Image (cartoon, rainbow, N blue to C red; front, side):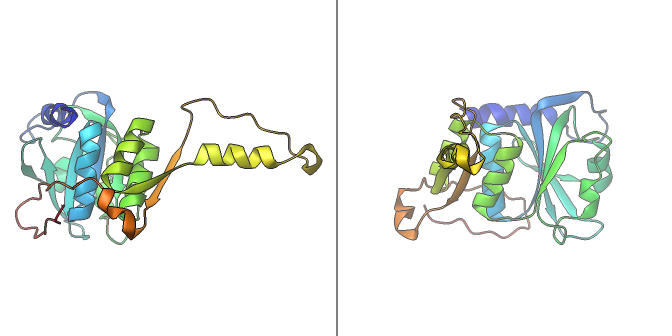
Amino acid sequence: MKKAIWMLAVAAVVVGGAAATPAAAQEDAVLLVAPSRFEVMQVAFDVARRYPTVLVSYQGSGKEPVLHVWNGYEWMPLSLADYQSGAFLQSYPARAVFLGDDALLPAGLRSISAWCDKSTQIPDLGTHELVNGIGRYLPFTPADWRWFAGRYNLTLTNLKAEEAEAAKRETWYDGQAPVKDPAPGFFKYFTRSRRASETAASAPLEPVEVFEGDVVETPAP
């Protein structure tokens, strides 16, 4: 149900052409700029399930990359000029996440400060690195972290709890005062892959939409 709601929201944000003029920022939305790779797209579409997302896909690392934007139903071609000006949007996402390192991500895709001045870049495209980076930036709720951990068969670790436990082991004689437990819900999480023997418990992945011309294989559940 959430996926349908978010996709409808994205369809309302993305317009069919460059004629419309963008309006004010949509504070609860994010622009996710991702390379057209199956594993990356899988994570990107899963983020859109749980968070209002405008998804732009790129191919090529030169000055004129091939761009497409997901309008909630299909991939639409997008020119670099329209992307940089925000002319393809009815409202601006308040923040942006660029996926890929400097060698992969075209420099021109970061040139959107005129309409989105909050952004981060996640260079590592491994699944758990993507989930960690995107989740800390948005930020994810504890329920979001648990959902992604089950979805991709990841181990969930409470970093705040570990830090608090380590601090409590310090004594006054070490020059460190004991630290109180963090407030409930004020946690940051880290995910890492489980052992291969545990993969049978992972949730089956669903096929994702990739625009024409990109050859991908859908992994078996």
